[in-house]
Amino acid sequence: MRQWAERPAPATTPQRPSRVPIAFRICFGLDGASWDEEKVLERYELLYEAGLIDEALRDGRSEAPARTDRAKLGLAMQSDHRRILATAIRRTGRKSSIAR
Image (cartoon, rainbow, N blue to C red; front, top):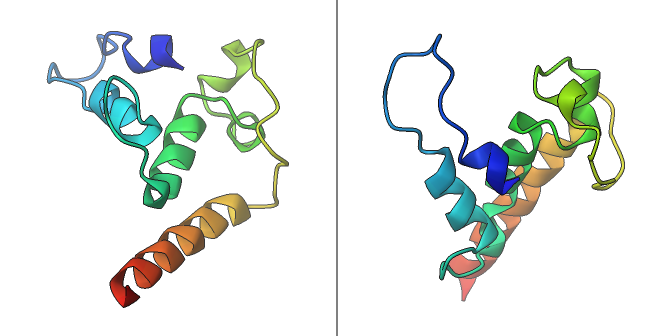
């Protein structure tokens, strides 16, 4: 995952600094960043974009077929139900932190 996050931007995209390495460190609590349980949706989206979850392979993400070392990260769900679940978990976490 770290190798994917820190890869150079493809030549076909405009040259601008990638936010992926920063988002990766923040979402996964690396390099001194604290773990934030509310970042569940962001973690899911990074794993999907990197082609590390089954939905990415099913949806034809270009990164997914190259990932032969993909670990089993939960069960695949129909359509985008896992993303919907991640969104719900994130919202629930925010509501409980507001109530405190």
